[in-house]
Length: 130
Image 1: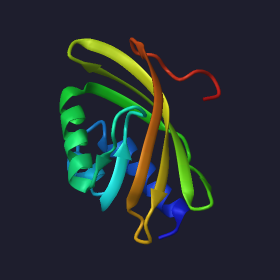
Image 2: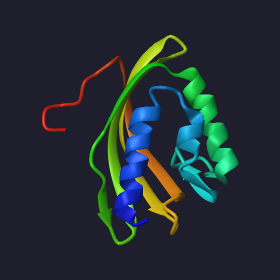
Image 3: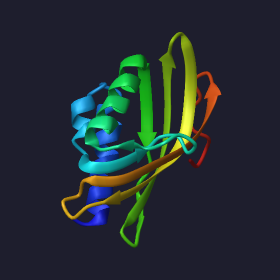
Image 4: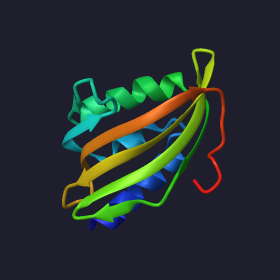
């Protein structure tokens, strides 16, 4: 599977399955030895089981989630996907806007994921032209 196909599959799966809380569908995107780094200053979750655990903890806590993903930007075997999401967690409603950097193996599974994002209290729609 080429990088563009893999990135589009990642985008579609996250867009459709994150709001449903479908951990299994999202976790299936990751290779057994993947590195999943959701926070830049925390050690990466290493391996598909660790990534699945991270997803399970977070998906369980998130309610009333809405999300949008832009088309992947692909170059030299890597992809970047911009995203925007809002949800309620522990009674707090927030919005996050970010980008995920991805690398894939030959089968199209994620071998490296890095997320960078900002958040704000409340539910906000993307700005014009986002």
